Length: 304
Image 1 (spheres, rainbow, N blue to C red):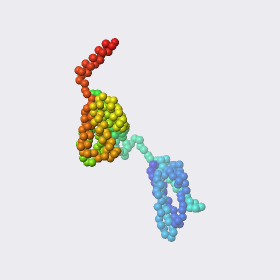
Image 2 (tube, helix red, strand yellow):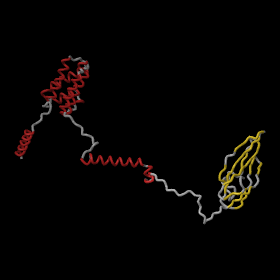
Image 3 (spheres, rainbow, N blue to C red):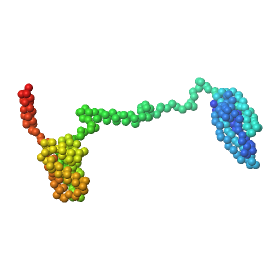
Image 4 (tube, rainbow, N blue to C red):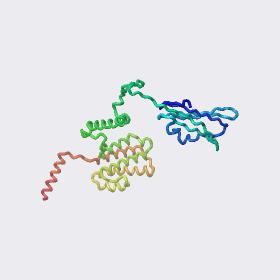
């Protein structure tokens, strides 16, 4: 032991030296059972790892150091250390440790202390720990609130719905048909030798026009079925023959693989435009419409 006399609370070291044959395994008994104390009044402050020294002749020396201290004054006996090798147990001598109490004069001013210092000021001390830890979440919430207020005063307060789906603009059947016919002509399909594609597009435009203008399911009907329905329609009677010639020519091109002349393509286009123009709805002026309504009302009154 470095010192057999110790001030209360101070520390001293116990040095263990074990010499043995090389390759022999041993251990200190009780080291694992009570690693923090040597007896009821002597505590183990720290145990250092053992160092091994080669002595030669297949012999080694194991050095181990234990730091002890005590907080109670008195004379204490440290029991022998036991080193177990196989079935043999080797004991060290007992040690004695005298712990001397520390004298304190309550009337004497004690100067061996660190002066009281004013605590350092940090800007983070002004905020709770929660704000410092989740500042990003608080910032996100503030941005969402600011965005909601901006949207309210800019749009909703004025009755404007910024993300509302705009109503679909419905083009009248006549305007849609003329627009598609103009586009078809600009593509010049028949000039590129695509007669079948040209007549297919042309008849599809007319069939769609009949569907929307007269509620005829022309897209699913044959040429004969379409003409059978139109013969009963007074609005199309003057131009039924032109439509019939277009549909017949288209059937020959699509199904009989007939190659029309360039003049036939131009004539079919002009007949299609003429059919749409001749059958477009006629707008009745507001005055005539009101007069007709009044006449109808008078007729009804007479009947009553």
